[in-house]
Image (cartoon, rainbow, N blue to C red; front, side, top):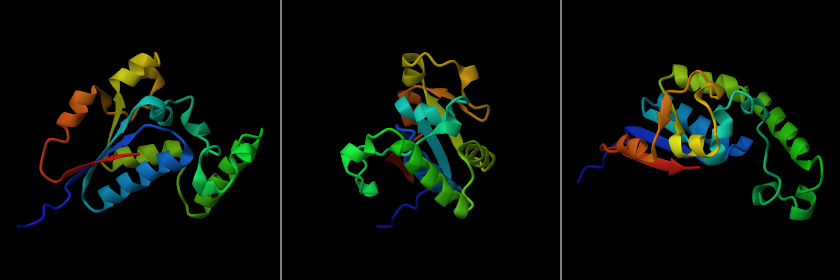
Length: 158
């Protein structure tokens, strides 16, 4: 039996921490570089990554993030999130990682589809004018699942 090559990657971004947003962006960009179709579905708090007023101020989660090795009590101290976010952005700059707004533009220009979740948009009372110009549209979850209905498609929840 022959394995089906991955032809399309659909990423679901539900949290807009720096580390989650960049994980989705890097993997979607990598897919496009390999000739694989890529789409990102922004839902719930993931919508912050595509809101014009919020996308430049994404932060690193310091509480409940075991990879940081910061005790929960310290992670919750005032200023810790800002320090961790500044350090993360500094490390990304060293690797020539573009800021969120530029990365979204790069993804869109590469053919990556960017979708907002209708339920979350309605729930948070977000207007389409508040979202990035490169957005491909607002979809219901059913519409998004229909985009996965072909051989070689993989979904990844981030």
